[in-house]
Length: 92
Length: 490
Ligand SMILES: [Fe+2]
Ligand SMILES: [Fe+2]
Ligand SMILES: [Zn+2]
Image: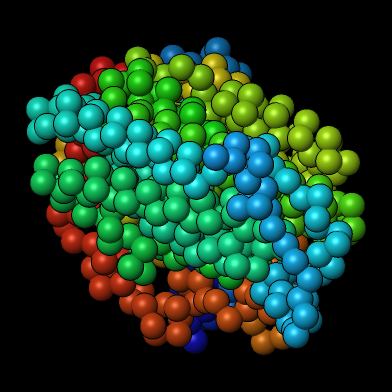
C-alpha cells in the first residue's frame, strides 16, 4: 500500500510529500526523501529518520515503524563529507 | 444657501427609530456582526474625515486625472523595456494577487454600507466601496496592458480564476476576510489590521522602491490607492474602540487571528519583492526593517492605545520576521514552474546584503542558495529542471501556503488528527486559528488532499498544466535562465 508522508529535511526550507510503500525500509525512505530535496540540500553520508522525536531503526519497514498516512517524518543528514586535503590540518 | 456644517450631519449621520420593524430585523446579528448592540450604543460613532459626496467626487476625479497623465507620459513600450527584468516579477506578483482582491473588498464594504450599525459608518463604507472599485480597475488596466510585452501579465486577470496553489491560498484568505465576514469582523480585520497595519508595506514601502527602480507608473498608482486606504481605514479604529468597550475578548481574538493571516500574505507579496526581486542597487531597507518601522512600532502602539495586548504568539511572530519569507522564497524558487512569475537567484553580492540584514538566520539559508547555484553549475544555463523540485509539496490546512514555518533547522509544522481527517499546519498560530472555528475551515481541502482524492493530478507537469493553469510560456523560470556571470566566478 502506498503511504504519503509529510517529510522535512534538516536544513531545508519546506515540507515535501513523499510516497512510499508500507513495506519499504526506513533506510529506503531516507534515500527517497534525500533525493526529493537534493536540489536544496546536499546529500550527507549518514542519515537519521525521526518521527515524533524518536529515531527510527533503518532496518524497520514503514509499517513496522508505525508510520501511517500523512504522518510527519524528519530526516537529519550528517554533512561529514571528506574535506579537501589542504583543509584537514586546519579544521581538525 | 446652507453652510457645509449645517447640512453635513443630516447627510452623513442620520439614524432613526423604527416604527413597524424591530432593530434586530433591520440589522440581524448574522449580517451585522457580534457583539450585537442597540443603536443607542453606536450613536457616538464617528470618523475624522467627514467627507461629503461632492468632495469625494471632486477629489477622486483629480486623482484619476493624475494617474491618467502619468500613464500617458510613461506608459509606452519603451518605458516598459527600461524596467529591470527582476522588478517585473514584483509587478507580476502584485498584479495577480491584489487588484481582484480589491474587487472582493468592494463586496465587504457594501455589506457594511447596508449592515454597519451607524449611518456615518455606512456612509464611509459607501465611499470605501467606490474606492475599492478603482483599486481593482486601475491596476487591472495598467498591469494587464503589459501582456502585450510579456505573456505572464495575463495572470493579472487569470490568477483568481485558476486553481494555482497561490490562488487557492489567496482565495482562502480573501474569501474569509472580504466576502464572508460580517461588518464588525470586516472592520477590525480589513480596516484595522490589514489597511492600518499592513498595506503601508506594499503601498508606501514598495512605492518608494518603485521610485528607486524608476517605475513611475507603479509608484503613482500605489500612492493614489494609498490615499483612499488612509481615509476608509479609519472605520477600523472607530469600530474596534466600540468592540473593545463591549467585548474585549472578541476584539483581541479578531486582531490576533487577522494579524497572523495578514502577516503571511504580506511576507510573500512584499517580502519577496523587497528582498529578492528589487535589484540590489535600488534596495533601501530590508523587508524586516520596513516591518519594524511600519508594522511593529506603529501597530503595537495603536493596539496599546486600544487597551489590547500583543497577539499571544508575538515571540513566534518576531522570530518569523527573520525567516518566514526567506523560507518561502527559497522553496518557491525551487518550485518556480508552479507559479506565473520568474525568480531571481541571489548572487554573492545579494547574499552579503541579506547576511548583513538577517545576521541571525542567514547562515541557515546560505547553504541552500549555494546548493542551488551548484545545481546550475552542473546543468549549465537554460536547464530549469536540474534546480527544480519534482516531488509534491505539503500545504498548511489554514493558510494553504507551503509548510515553511520556523527555520531550516527547525520546521514548525504540526500534524493533527480531527475525526477521520489528518491535518497539517505550518505553525502553531495557523493551528490555533483553525481550532477556534473549525466549521469555518473544515470543508476546504488543501492541494495534497485534492491530489490524494484524485481531483488533481499527482504528476508535477500534469498538475501545472491541467490544474494550476500554466503553460511553458507562462510558468515561472529563473529570470536569467541560470545565465549569471557570477556562477562561473564564485
Ligand atoms: Fe483598496
Ligand atoms: Fe481598502
Ligand atoms: Zn499556515
